Image (cartoon, rainbow, N blue to C red):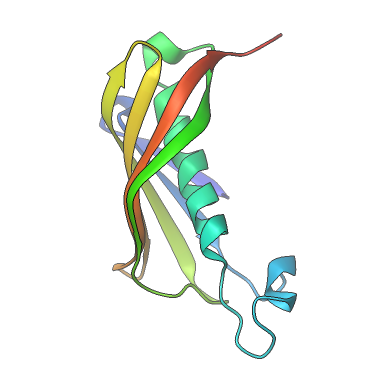
Amino acid sequence: MENVILTDELIEVTGLKNVTINEPFFQGHFPGNPIMPGVLIVEALAQTGGIAAALVEENKDKLGVFTGIESFKFRRQVVPGDTLQLEAHIIALRRGLAKVSVKATVEGQIAAEGEIKFAMVDVKK
């Protein structure tokens, strides 16, 4: 993720990823027809969601550890030249757990969406 934009009192976070043909995963996924692997889109959304959860005051010194994924759908392929907009909106925070609604779009079209869960753990210093 290259840029992070904070909005709505740190309840929503938006990130941007410029997808280029120079990404090493395109060499094998797939030769002659490069498509960003879905697992990397999920990871980018998890990082965006983890940032959103960690910016909430009660989680100030915590790290969001990915614990689950729900209702996830891929709706569009992501290819070299696309700019992936990553959005995360916190929908629940309780007792060290966070649930975040996430969405990845390209030019306003949904590429992937779902919900990601985190356990908020203390960061060792």
